Figure (tube, rainbow, N blue to C red):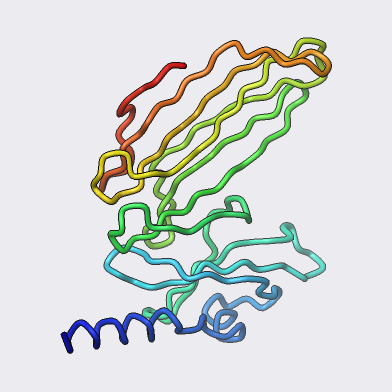
Length: 204
């Protein structure tokens, strides 16, 4: 009982630890033309607690306005990582101590917009993709084909791991009217290597 209590106290203490100061991070990066706008803790393999930090560049010669930095206090180091959407969710779907990141991206083209959704992990400073899906929406058209994908996370197998339920819909839109042409749900099981696809497809 005492051991469990001490482990709980240690967990609370670690969870309340703060991200290193801005000047410390700038020193690790050997760069100073930015300001930190937000930070959130994230867990990497081997139970390493790190921080995902959003920065805003303020130099006159800046190419980008924003960036992401992975800060690793255990190693007294930090590095910029490949950019993904600045709005994301950090979670742990299978409770294994390694964080997953869920985010959306959007690309505009002359005749359509491409939407993508990703589930990734960070291994060191590299992005490891667990799963992604995409859908498109036509634009500047009288009869537009519109795809849409909704994600919902739930324990689908009773193993206390959050799996993915993906709802796909294809519609034809004209003016204010919309006609559903195709719709299906597939349930995708999460495991240590990512997502097994599919688990139980469910056409509607």
